[in-house]
Image 1 (cartoon, rainbow, N blue to C red):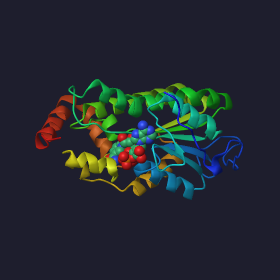
Image 2 (spheres, protein in one colour):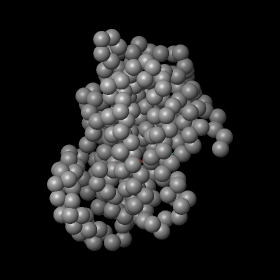
Image 3 (cartoon, protein in one colour):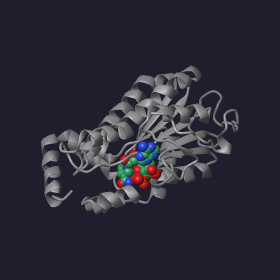
Length: 268
Ligand SMILES: NC(=O)c1ccc[n+]([C@@H]2O[C@H](COP(=O)([O-])OP(=O)(O)OC[C@H]3O[C@@H](n4cnc5c(N)ncnc54)[C@H](O)[C@@H]3O)[C@@H](O)[C@H]2O)c1
């Protein structure tokens, strides 16, 4: 697959590096002056993060299939390479693009392959091409948009549950392996966020996701604070921590609870 032509936003040309605050004795994740790339930045959570990070004084390059500074399909490694190469120096890479597919084992391989490439491999490809440079210079930050489904599960979607669990596992592995070499990783794990993805999922029978759904702008606020604290797990819905605890403490009981929820939403 040939990479699409990548047109670069004028504010993000290589070599044009705004003053990077925080360099010195200890590099810190203050957003002011940082160079940020956000995939899936054309809508929803990615667009809200872009707007909020710009308010903080970051230079943000959004990448998406449409409505973004750069056209990039993250399901193709070569397009991610083009994005990373042309962005020049990057301080924070937000691997946020994601899709949902309802169903289970009956979903055709093409569907599994597509969601695997977008929800999981895109994080791996970004790391593959950013780490050599970041390890050399001694710092860099990955913010991977996962989901509470990566910690728990997605009722009604095996492909989403599996690929988000894998994305979380990879994020944890990155954090453990490279933290001491200056690399920081956060995994953003919300439940429902009021975006097109949630609207589509609700229309397909997963209406329970609307309960307690938050605005993307609120999620962006929480994320800015969590990045400043270099927190690995970002939980805009704090109750998710309790659900994780329940799952860890008594897995059988947690599964029984999830089956009850499934029974309430048989159409999901
Ligand atoms: N909305 C929620 O309730 C929710 C909850 C948990 C996690 N998430 C995750 O948040 C992330 C963003 O989702 P959202 O809710 O903003 O959805 P959204 O559908 O509103 O936005 C997703 C964006 O990703 C883009 N995208 C999809 N496939 C792409 C590809 N191959 N290459 C580049 N861009 C692509 C879309 O064009 C879209 O602009 C996803 O990873 C999703 O799994 C969403």
